[in-house]
Image (tube, rainbow, N blue to C red; front, side):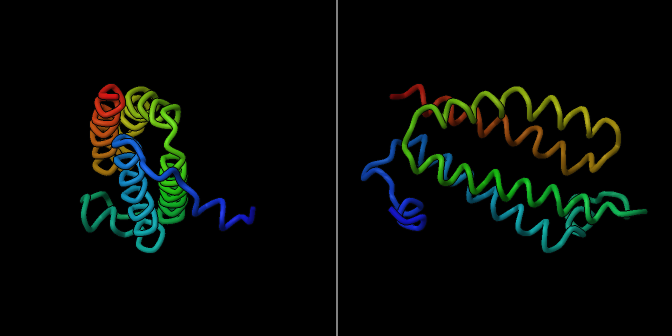
Length: 134
């Protein structure tokens, strides 16, 4: 099978949690792409302090990471496997809030990171609920 054929393949009927995680992946991918293209969004929408050094480059790396996570959520979810959904729940409820709250407390992009530190666990809780409805 070719690489593109493998990317396009998916089970005929995806469970609701897979569809939800794929939509979340699209959200992450789009947000990552916006941050890559416009790191100044941190100041424009989140009222972060002006960059004093090379923060725009760091923000682009964060955008790339977010976009890659979104890409993997989309295609992991398209497999229809419950393991993918369960894995996303665990990191969304533990690692993401712990790290992002900690980094936000240091004053590094606090508004942006606090938003994701709250939003991501909420999305993880929804995914857990959808996963448990099987």
